[in-house]
Length: 362
Ligand SMILES: *Cc1c(COP(=O)(O)O)cnc(C)c1O
Image 1 (spheres, protein in one colour):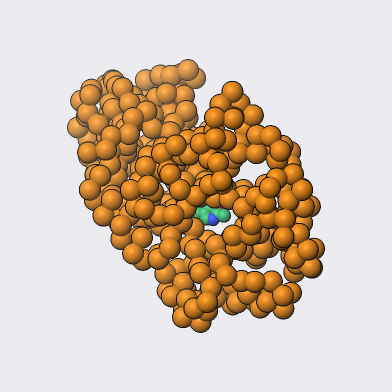
Image 2 (image 1 turned 90 degrees about the vertical axis):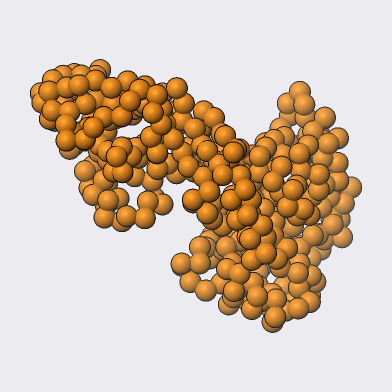
């Protein structure tokens, strides 16, 4: 009765080890749903890998990793005073466990700061907190601009600056080296020390080149997808078949009493909207034409059917109706032998938005 993620632990770990070799001084990123594996598990793996720092997305995520991962914790989302009062629950949410969490984290926390005001606030409120200053990149998400650098420089004595952070677009969008170099030059022109840069989405080749060009700078690649999800063959989602019903063309079924499109079977499977099972094909599906076709259907209401992520007899099958909260219903034409109740079907889910009922490390 479950949507289960099966992980071939040895193979997955081999890939994690390989990623650590490809990205020297890697900072694993554990955020959101833990890339499908869960934040606690990622914290444990990062501890096993021996990295000196683990990055999380938000202050709230610290609670899931702080005990398991014993070393430094970098929060990627820039600090804002409305998140947390810097003088009180500055380690995270003001929950009952807030102060325990603070004790657990102690001096291991490194905050990202992306505005001079936030830097000033932290510097005033805390005793030289550890921070990294995020610089605005072509992403245009967060970061101080070049005009802010003089203000930043004035406030750096009140904090322990652990380096500069650059969040860059995906490599497909163009080369990163010029953008990184431009920032190194701007920082140096502003008289700021550039000892360490925390970077996202640089390729191992780009990191190599930068390391050669700037041996005096320590580059710290923050990596999520290319670490945890790099070997798709090392994990697999499967869903139980909960029920199978023979149907004839035109038979009605479901809440809306739709008609089935032909002779065959309705197959009720575990996994629904609660799990993140959606009408659209997940974007990482390699088969672009399938994806376009699915989207072109304009959802189920327009075309009466959409391609599901469930595979039976080697092929993705059509939803009979939109997924429900816990289950989905597929239509299987009579030419295909139906699965048995209790069988587990492969499901092609997007790992970063799927909530599994169970995760089984084998
Ligand atoms: C999520 C995130 C990353 C990791 O992204 P992936 O594409 O999963 O490797 C790196 N840096 C920042 C700032 C992020 O928010």
